[in-house]
Image 1 (cartoon, rainbow over the protein chains, first blue to last red):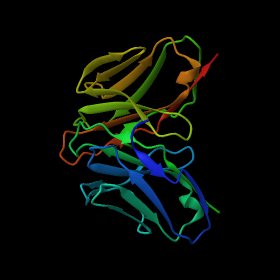
Image 2 (cartoon, each protein chain N blue to C red):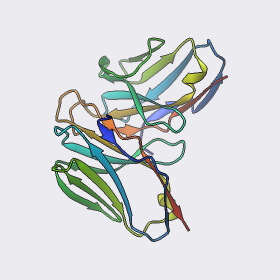
Image 3 (cartoon, chains in turn brown, purple):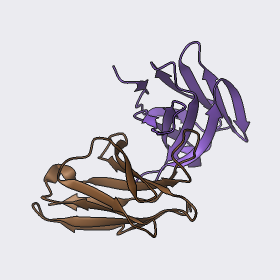
Image 4 (cartoon, chains in turn cyan, orange):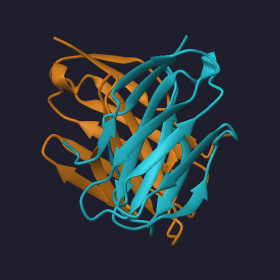
Length: 114
Length: 112
């Protein structure tokens, strides 16, 4: 158990809908990362937050947004969902943002868009 | 060309064999090198973490970094069926805005 908690574990939704994925980082970790992993694809970095502020953006679509709250939990919002958005979405956390910080992953939220 | 190249496999070996997994990279500024193990539909789990060059050993696992060749390796001795997973390499430059660059992952199958 990495200490990173993600909910829900699985969800199925229809195209055009909106979903929210939730992440609680490890105790003491200030940095949260979101990744997308499609079937048989590598990890795609989406976005990073540090202590409530956006720190870095990766290949995140405009239909997707995220935020980190004062209690450090984070949410990833996916809207106008398309079939191609079906993927595993991972949250990860680390203590800080500097290189050398170990990143710990949650178990992921499996999203199926039908 | 991707910054980090990793053969996706699958790599299939018999139980007990020594496994060698590799990544090559193009950015000579990378200093932090990591190997993660990912079981099917589970979150990646950190296996090995190395700073700069050299070897690091942890039980049956050895991580090796050759910066002159821009090449990193993960060796697994006495491989077990439970080692069957996808192995991802990741690396980063010394930076205050830490970003990991990931390999695509190699799927490893250990046959009993």
